Length: 255
Image (cartoon, rainbow, N blue to C red; front, side):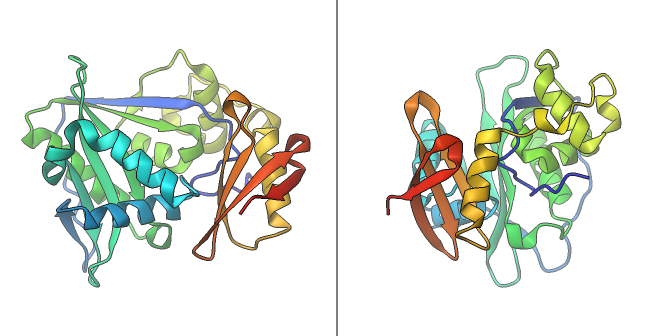
C-alpha cells in the first residue's frame, strides 16, 4: 500500500476536472463547535494563506499571497459572498472554499481553493464544506458546477467522487489512471491500474529524500519549469529556499 500525504507533491502532476449536474441541496451539518463564516476583510487573507500552507500546497508565504491576489483580483468585490471559511469554537479559521464565476456557458461556476487545515483533517469537515458550496451555488441560481483538482490532491479527489462528482476530462487518461491506482474508486472502472514508478515524479522523490536528511517534518514545493531549480521548504513555522542539482540529489541552501 502506498504511503501518501493528503497533498503529495511526489505524485506526477495531472489536472483532474469533475462536474456535478442538476444540483440539489445536500444536508451535511457541521460537527458541534464549528460554524461557517464568509470572507470579511484583508485580515482573512492571512488565515486563507495559513490553511493552504498547512496542507502542503504552498511552501512559501509570499508565493501563496501572490497567488491569492492574482486569482481573486477579477472578482475581489464578491468575496464576501463567494469565499467562506469553517471556524472553530476558538474563532480559528480552519477550512475554506470558493465558488468562482466563469464565462463557461455550460458550467458557469467552479469550486476553487477547497482546503482543510492539516491539523483538522479527519474531523469530518470536508462533506459539510462541499455541502455548503453546493447550497451557495443553488442560491446563485446555478444548476451545474465544475471543479479543478489534481493528482497531488488525491484524497480530495476521492472525496469529490464520493460526494457525487464525476470525471469530466476523461481523455486525459494519465491522471485518472494514477487516481484509479491510488484509490481504486468504483467510478474509475474505465481506467487502468499503473505501476508505482508511473505514479511518482523521480525528481521530486529525490528532493524529498534529500530534505528528509535535514528536516523531520516539512512541506515543500519545487519549481523546475523554464530552467528553474528552486525548492521552497516550510518547517517549524519557518521558510527556507534551496537550489537543487544532480536530479535532486544535491541541495544548496539559498536563505
